[in-house]
Length: 384
Image (cartoon, rainbow, N blue to C red; front, side, top):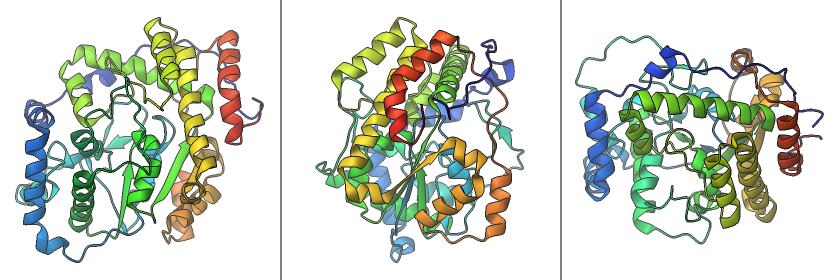
């Protein structure tokens, strides 16, 4: 692929002690999140009580054109979330919202009554140079999806939710949850990052016909290298800190680690092949097959559904980092967010291609990735 950057080969390194140490989970969080995860019906009941407590505050809150950022992990979803979350009109989940994601109103009332400690931004567990505080935006709505769709991370069944999906209790709960979050943040527009929402695009558009979607995609060579790096890190972190494995399951983070689960795109044979390749230690081929499977499914959905295609904007990670200003301008316009050009310039200055690692593929592995991913990559504008 001529326009896909082919890096020089470097050694595959082990995670640092600091990176592994960041997987430690506090005891109070472990127990609270465990109760919520193990008692979904009770948690939903508390969420409905939370809505009644917030009734007056959300009476006039409307959900207008919610924005969804969805892509495979390591495609640029986090930086897009951070940039959009800085907009004055935007409200998102934050790190401080977990564990009690189901009851955001009462939890926020509690937090407002206790002293807020001073904190320095710390690099997140991914070891990717992104530093966060408790106020940083984060992806937590997956907790809701798991409570209402218990099979949503079961790779033995299709994880696709489309315009024929119906779940009235979830839909009512979800809308009220978003309204509460907007009221808490004093925001007009909801923004969510959710990797698994790639398999729910049509369903979400059915719920919110004015929704906007940003779908990042990344050069498969670098993307697969980053995915493999994270798999190594998460395995080490979860082995050293067993509670972190429970934590990842409870937040709906199955992309990496000891309980890695691929999204089932509706193709039983394809998902079984990916799982078999991973089980046999053929990581490069497994990730390449997975990348192609997921993004070809997305491309098929966009081709078949004009309304969805109009609601979505695909963002190539390389263009986001290299031609940041026009890409960001286009993304904000697509989302219907007004923004001054100096803000775009400042945001663009923060974007750059990663320099903290290099893929370590042999020539044969590069050829394998190219052969597997090329047909799908071409559909998103990558040249061979």
